[in-house]
Length: 376
View (cartoon, one colour):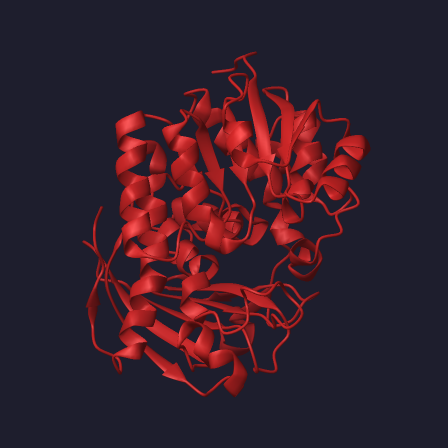
């Protein structure tokens, strides 16, 4: 149901976060009202560049502004949970980039606060709004794939040169990009059907440079996990690396199914592959051009599925534009705030996706013991 109501949005963190400013400015149901950054010079530069009405260096002061309906948090990972908790307590709707948090206790607090306040919380997970994911999800929902037999995700990235909290970060603490599609494809949020991981086994492999290990007491160059999905006979496998692994950036998602299987492209610039069961062996694999899904969005923000809006942040450029996901994320969040559709992932779902990684690292540090994932 269409609405002409507008949500006044504040963006917190203007590195990666600045990429969303023109999307909210163009969206018919948003008012890009305020921005927040600790660095005053950069804050003022951004405000002038985009013409945003209000600018804050102090997050606590921003939360006191009664005109702000929702905050979109794009700050460093250690700030995600504290800033989310403060925003919910201040009565604001929250969109937050991944991960939701880095501890079980913070995740529990966020889920409980969201339920108490009734405000929308959405974790802004790019992969489940990427064109590749939307394509394979559409094939599954139409019955083309058949029965899903196995799921695999990987996220390999060289984080050298990134901000100071990254070196030594346990790979699985930042695993939602490969965990999320494995659970989202089996979910139907419009019908309240959400697939959840129930337990995980993870092994660490290799060793990062010695000076990085003490920060998080995490030695592994690679962590790879398998997790069981509640009420499903499907198991998923995910692999993560952040440092000291020679590999081009890749966020990938593979689906092995009874009729047609999908494999993400190996290299940037290639097309993904469909494997068609029942054909002669040479004809089974077929490269496929994935369509764009801009048509699902309001017309003024459709152009943002392409990397045509001068995006410069490394996460966007290195990630190939995040598969055109940014306008889909902003639109879903706004529609959830306006009560038009459920947020996806909402707080309990985001909690599960994030906890897979937290519990996986816990398993790796225990030599591969199975860890039960808390259900909040």
